[in-house]
Length: 309
Image (tube, rainbow, N blue to C red; front, top):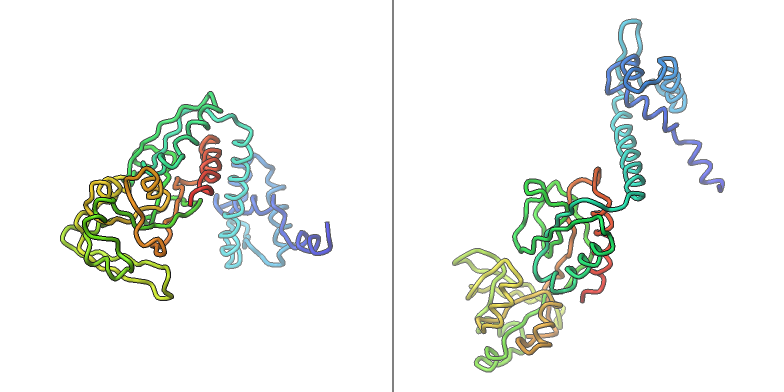
């Protein structure tokens, strides 16, 4: 250990003392903490005194009848709880790392990610873990993970604020595509300003209201396209179907549109321009108590996201 690391270690309070102090504060007395932790009362008192000596400040004001947190004690308790919780999570994760994934794992993801290869990743993962059962809900709707009992969601685009934990694992551009038949009728636009003369497909469910695309590309200044959509959908699969039907020019994750270009069902419009990147995220409830299979699947899906354009 180098000198700097040694100096830092010497300034850190004893972990055991922090845990004991936190329990004393939460139970309201040294006696209650000793009973709850199964530790002699003398040890409880000694560890708290050692912590106070280390910090150079009184944390608990003691009298013959009662004890109460001092102001420094109240502030230290906030950090003490975080330390205890972090230690518990670390212990849980270490125990889970040794456990073989088993039981039922439920996840949900949009169809475009299944087509991009995420479904194959999940299938291989389940095949490699014979004690694991998996249920996949392929849907573009925002599933309520807690209420509906899902362990994990894979989502594309902007996420709603929530108490769930979000982990961004990648991103993909959003480019413009149209059916060859539509371009044959209307011609190929050469700049963003010409899009106003084409039927466009929206990405929001807002009937009768205008929508806006912001495109970045060949000009230093972004292009703003405001339009009333011919059709709107909050599903990339539905937008792709509308594009193939010739309803208009639509914006899709680039990896989805390029598959359509490859099979001849679409052409890319204004290839030098693209919308803001769409985040690919994993969403789940609190880390604490997470099944080992969920944690390992998160790692597998994170690796797959790196290969998307």
